[in-house]
Length: 452
Image (cartoon, rainbow, N blue to C red; front, top):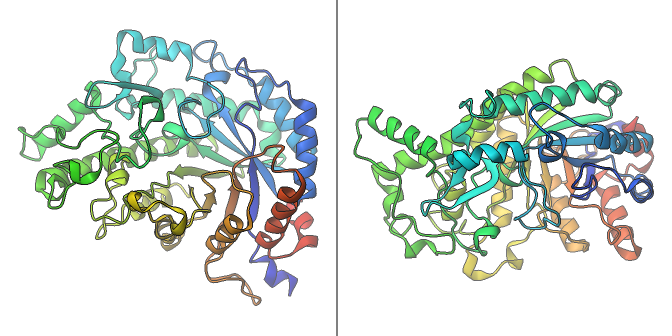
């Protein structure tokens, strides 16, 4: 019986604080983190997730990697008997929801942007976004002779070499490959740092010279050399009907609009495909699960144009599943899909945002499951209440527990955002413990067995 119930077990991870390693690449919070990890272990969690910041590790210069602070953190996690999910964080920390510290991408990489600002994502107004390099430079050898993809591959290879001990010991179980701002595979279409406010539709972000040239070549090849990038899609805080592109019967439904949207979303999928190819080569022979993160863009989901998803690069319409195509790409790499906003309910959203997080979560999880992927989830905002936890539980096993074996569907894992003293105090801690037990299908004694 316990064996059958074990098939219902969903692993629970907790995201470590953004600044667990300091902005000068030191680990100074040893005692505090050790005490917090002890409480997590007592709560029965399976492991922790951590951002491994490119801006810190390769901050001093090309290939001058310094992993020492991260090794100290990983030692503590290993000591605590917890598993570890490591995010290859090729983006800047700062400028997004919940960012409490500022860790830019390496200075020497940004210095290239002083003479060639087009290495950064650019909106139609010409504003650059320095959170993450534009995917337009994936194959451009602009960085001391290396392309962006080569820099990411070299970083992962150095990680593997330096963290061999933890990989061999089975402590590191998951490598999540950062593919965009906030570590998510998307365009930086809704940057708070540039004045975006929820529920603005965001903007298409493909006006750097590299992506522009790519689009012009693609349009010419399709027999339409006259087509240009959209100039009618509005600004960050517009509503869809304010724009020619997204309004009813707008540009997005025309031949030209469809061509652009296919190009824009395919560039993003190819970007993920390329970097996962490198990750697979690097981690060949390691017992790790590769993963990527998809952003939960739940606003404007209830309107036919799905404007906010489209500007982020997810070509998802009522008659076109934009997430299934991403899931299909992931099957090539045996990578899992990590999705956010698992705690949100439609009833908690404002009417004006035309938001439907519950339907969106169902759509994305189903896309992954249909393609046979491992699908994982996170919460988008910090919550300590039973309502949020119950929503996560429902998403974790939509058809409930199956006492006779594996449930029809279940999450591969869930990561709680994020570790804080508030989580570990009083009622919050008690509620969290109950949640972990339920995710583990109440197999309290099995928790330890699973962790071995």
